[in-house]
Every structure is written in structure tokens, then in C-alpha cells.
Length: 153
Image (cartoon, rainbow, N blue to C red; front, side, top):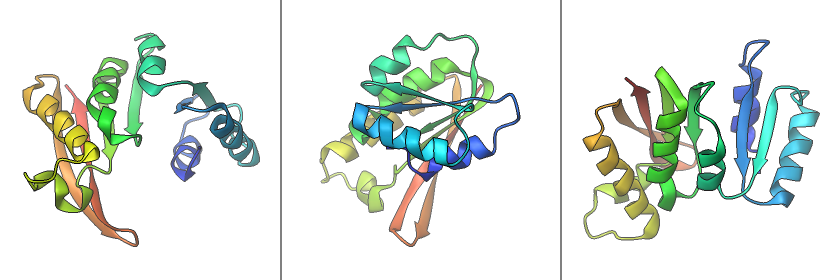
């Protein structure tokens, strides 16, 4: 569903800016559209319905995006990131949320699917010559986690 992040990002867009958000289910897309309409951002936000990796693969490389924000199921983080890398222009930013996982990513004994998905993303970043990235741990109301901030070179 369209969480606050899509609305906050859309509000920050320039007059000619556009935000594309992906929703897996029609019901979630309907709720997202209601929230976007209520926020007065209908003309700035486009919702694509379907599995995110498939939806991303169908987006043409041109025109390229300035920013990609990935906050989806963590098992597919690497696949989402690879598509975002293709779609974001040189100098553009890719942010991946929830990558510290309360420190579980650094614990070699933890093998849950979310943790393995984040590790796969980190392995991709380690070998990428097109990306410079850092992971930042955060602490807040919901505990502690973090995000990866990457710049496409």
C-alpha cells in the first residue's frame, strides 16, 4: 500500500516531476490511489500493479530516474537493486530500506530469508563497478535498523 514515503517523495518533486510506485496487489493499489488523491498528488504519481521485479523489467531505461527508493520484501533486494541500477541515471541515488535488520545481517548464524536477501544485495554491491554505497544504521521509535545509500557512477 502507498505508505507515507510515496507521498513525502511526491511532495518534494518539482512541478514537472513524476513518481512511479509499484504495488503487488490491486487492492493495495486502490488504497494507495485513494491516499495519493487525498494528498492532492494524483497528477504526480503513477502506480504500476504487479510483481515488482517484472514491473521494473518492463520500465524502459530512458528517461532515467534521479532516485530509486526500495522498501519491499527483502528476499528480492538484489533483483530490485539491479533493475534500479539500470533505471537510475549516472549521479542518481538508490536507497534500500531495512538492511541492518537489528544487526542480524552481520550474524553469520542468522539465515532467515530477509537476512539472506540483504546479504545477496551486499554481495552485488561489493562487486559493482557502477555503484558507490554505504550502509547507515538508524535508531528510532521502531527500534534499530538502517538503510543503504548508493550513488550510480
